[in-house]
Length: 483
Image 1: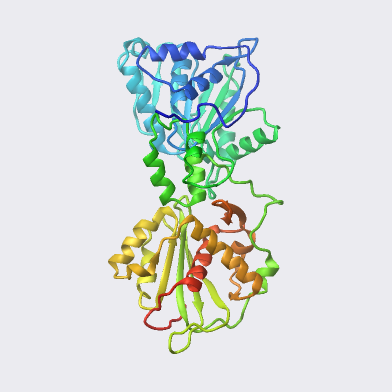
Image 2: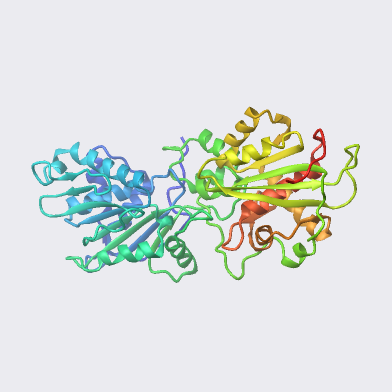
């Protein structure tokens, strides 16, 4: 059996005098708990001490792809701190479901082992199960409390250990609410553990990103552990699966990764399953297209009709999607004419209510549309099924590969440079085309990356529509208008 890499692909860890990590692992393994080598290493660092017997690192952060047991060692570290060292612990997560799951796993372990259960407050007062206010209370006054940041923030007590799960979502305001609860600890030896994955393009959190950047530029004080690919690369490259996922062979199987690699956008797969951190957007970010190039393609006279194609792009996090169209001039005999194609953003929509709007818009024009390109794992399958149910011809629906997406982006960039594509000067489309960052797609291709100023779904939906207009062999039954 082959297993994933057990040592970080990157780490910034300081010196320490000793650690009780091995002792803690031995204790819990005596109760049937099993740690993989990467988790044993985490326990060693969490319990590392300096020459004075204090925590060697006040802050430790762990970045790892999803489904790789980030919180597993932290769970037993919290139990060790409370039940062995008498330290009060706060566990904080962004989502209530994550908080409740962590609480239940800890309670199940405690109640399943008498050595731990007998240390709880007597008469049923040791476990408080009220939703949103869960807690574990020991007879000696030590607590493990649980907080969902989106609902309640910190619990208001004083804690020596804070575990911050889903750290990529942690905002500066939430950090400022949690951090002071460790300042006045009785022991004077506080510690915060951050567990997270690389943040998505619309993730509101900034704290975890700043930790990552400081660790990599050598200016951080936190200890940082990371399993991550250094580029989007080829999603089908199995060597990178094992390089960045320590749970490969233990909990993650190759066929599961292969399915994800074949159904997700390359950048989304790299971030979620390979731990890839997109380049921080800043003044020196590389853009796909300059404003002058795109501005020179603006027209006041868009075509009234022609061959019509549609591009739909869903964001990797499933929060939104954009629909764009491309019109290519045709004569009365449905022959494509010379002259520039025209692209237009129809709308960007939240997926909070599903993909119904996209399906309705396309279905209402199904007899006029020659091809529909749909990209993005979140929403694509549902939209395609809705279109088929609405009698949209299957041959008109295109699901682009990674290479196709890179080709579409290259084609619209080349068309803008040659001035053989036009647009109406829509502000949202212009911002997307000229202010999105450039990201790597596949071996040699590129794509659009979200920034504060530009929405990549807008740019790539437009590129997909243009790509189909220039390559499809289908002809709808009649010419059509954008509206």
